[in-house]
Structure formats: C-alpha cells, structure tokens
Image (cartoon, rainbow over all chains, first blue to last red; front, side, top):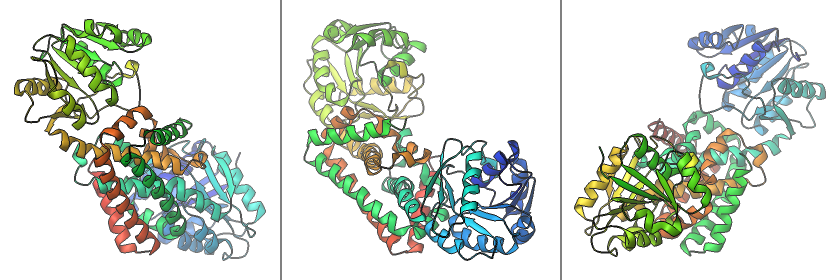
Length: 281
Length: 281
C-alpha cells in the first residue's frame, strides 16, 4: 500500500535508513531521497539500499521540494530547525513528520507554524538501537513495534490518517496519543531506563573489569550518543524527574527491606518484578 | 590437564551442568557424578552430557564418597547445609568448593568446620544467565570469564592452588580475593544491578506494553529466580545497601542536572558513562 509517492528522509541514520530500506525493498514509494549532513553518508545511504538518491544538507531545498512526505529523522535537537527549513521548500500538500524521542516541544513548535498547505504530524517509532549510521539500517525494523503518532486539536485529520497508514505500511502498531501523554510514557519506559543504565555504569567505574554479561546487557543502552540524550533530557525534563523520583522511592524500599532482612516483603517484590518481566518474554 | 580424577557436582543446573559438560567433553575428569534434587533432573543431567551418572539428594553420601572434588552448585541458601552433609561422607583428602554469588558467610561457615582431612575453598565463576536447569548448560561457559577464588588465613594452600588450576582448566581467569573483597565487588557489579533492573520493572508496571528492546535488555536479569536473589540479599545485605546509596546519589545528581537544565554537566556525565561502557565492547 503506497501512502506517499515521493518521500524525503532528512537524516539517514539507523532509523531514517531503516525507513528508506523498507520503502524501497517493499516498493512503498516511487522515490526515496535522503538528505544527509556528511559527505560520507551520501555513499552509505545508497550502499545501505535506503535511498534512490541523496543530497547534502546545504541542498535540503532540492531534496524535499517534490516530496509528498518529509521525515525528520535527526536527533531531537535538530528536528525543529530542520522542520522549518524543509517546510519552506516543500510543495503545497506535503506532510512532514518526525521520529523524535520527545514530542511536546517538537509538536508545539512545528504543528502551527508551518506555511499554508504544509501539515505536520508528530511520530515516534519505538524501534532502533544504540547503533549509528545508515549501515546499521535494518529491514522490518518497525514490524511489530509500537509507533506513537500524536494528535492535538490542531492536527490535520487527513494528514494524521495518512501518517498512521504510513507507519502501518511499515508493519508498526500505531498508538495515537497526545504529545503530553507520549512524553509521560517514554519518560518511564525509555528515558528513566537510560539514566538508570548510565548511573549503573558510573557507579561501577572502578570495577568494570569484574563485570559480566548481565551488566553488559543491563547497560547496553548507555552506549547511545550522549548528544541525543542531552536533547531528550532538555525537552522532557519534567516528566523524567517525576519518573526518577518514583524509581528512587522503589530503590529505597528495596534498600530498607534488604537492610532489615525483611524476607517476606523482599521476596514479594522480587517475585513481582520477575513475574512482570516474564510477561514481556 | 586433569586436576581431579572424580568430581561430584551437587546441583546440576546451568552452572553445575556447564562445569560437568566441560569436564566430560574435554576429558578433564575420569568420572563426573551429579547429585540432584528432582527426579526429572536425573535424566536432564545425563541428556545434557553433564554427568556420567546422577543420584538424588537423599543418596548424596553415595554420590560424593569417592570424589576428589565436590562442587556445591546450588542456590546460595543451600550451600552451607549441603556442604556440611557432603563433607560428612567425603573421603579424606577431598576438596570442596562452591559457585555461590556471595562468599563471606559461606566461607566463614565452611572453611573451618569441616572434618579433618576435608578442605574447603570458596569459588564464584562470573558466568551464567537467568536460565535454569542442566538443559541450559553450555560448553565453554567459563572461558574468558572471571572466576573469584577466595583466600583467607585459614585456607589450605594446596587446596587453593588446586582449585585455581581447576578453574583455569575450564578456561576461566582466576581472581584471588578475600571473601570480604569478593562480596564488596559483586555488590556493585552484580547485586546492585539486579535491584536496579527489578526496580525499573516495578516502576513500569503499568506501561509494560509500551516498552521496547532497550527496556528488555536492561531488565533481562530481573528474570532470574527470586529465591536465589533473596539468599544473595540476605548474605550480602551490608555491601548491597552501600552500593545502593552510592547509586541513588548518582541518580540524584542526574535528577538535579536535568531539572536545572545544566547542559554542560549533564553532557559530561552522559559522555563519561558512554565512554566507560564503550570500554566493555
């Protein structure tokens, strides 16, 4: 099901590249154009089979001008600026979306400020890893994964419906939320988890040589690009601090039960977390 | 290099089973006898290629009486009791070791209380997963992994040297420590990490359906048997609370920097944790 004929992807990294790869391999678009920051990425995007052609960022206007869909697949901190630049060169009727990990700030800044005839709908596919670059793009990266799509009272209903169909065509399970609900959810399921993993690594800085595979699994996400997380922390500060407070409260309960050797309650909590985690297997 | 001719393994689960599998497949022992709790495990231990023969726990005496090495590979809470029972049936000159995740309590209780001629040396190979049972035993599970071996002023030097050679014959990197040092190290690199993962799962109990692969990696260790962790928390309570306090201090620093949007310091911490974690790749 071809929802959009021409698609421009700004930022052909792991996520942007995986979108392009699916679009091309499944013939879900007639043309995929990549817009990249570095010369090296021009070649990599082609090599990964993610785009039909790629242009550098200084030719962004050329890259997006015929696109029916423009996808902003850069780190959060670049999305708003590039979204405005892309909209200025986009054709009438074009739809813009993004894949940023926070939504409130982005949707507020883009949804109502674009030129007449250009619509924005926020997205956030819950897929991808700590890896970087188009060469880490994967086919079917989104298949069976949740993809948040945001709806506000200003969201164009037709654009929203198309964006939802677009993500479904890549196999994603679309979850429609408000930007605020989105940011609340990901603060818990993603941002808190990242801060916890980073804190575990720092806690163990003098003992890393004694860590084993469990530690490596638990802290794998701490490998992701710090700049990306800096953007996320800045644009979702409030919700992240709320989740951190709750997390520390649970840690304190564990601490108390361990120190008081309260076996019954400790067993209850360990069993609860094990059962909950089992439900994800 | 055959360090011990006859080896009895009490508890033929993932770790005990993997020891047996290596001993047999590499001909590092003439005979491997398994001692198991459940009837089902008799068959599984054989099927996994982990033992030459297996007996049930009520025939423990039979299982261990000819062994040159007896390995206690049960959850921490069972090690001391079974160690004493095994020692009562062991032959003169036999050496007993364990694979328990805490060492201070175990070594204190076993090293000096065994019958004349039976020596105990504590071990803790840093390998294994959240999986259970001999059918999850793996060849070369210990290869390239650290294995702690404890030394106190009461440790028999000859037995210590043999136990170190034994683990090296399985490919492990032996780390000689005091039981206290061991418990301090694993509180940080393992026990703290487990409590953090369990707390993350509980924090997200109402949002599990929105979690993605990063969350699953980070919390995988919360799948391990709660009873095992209960034993660990009880026998290493002090060190775990110390590590939890330090961990919460780091989380609080993150919280403060995020809430105050202190980009420079936040960036520094995210980069520090990323660089540290990279060193493990």
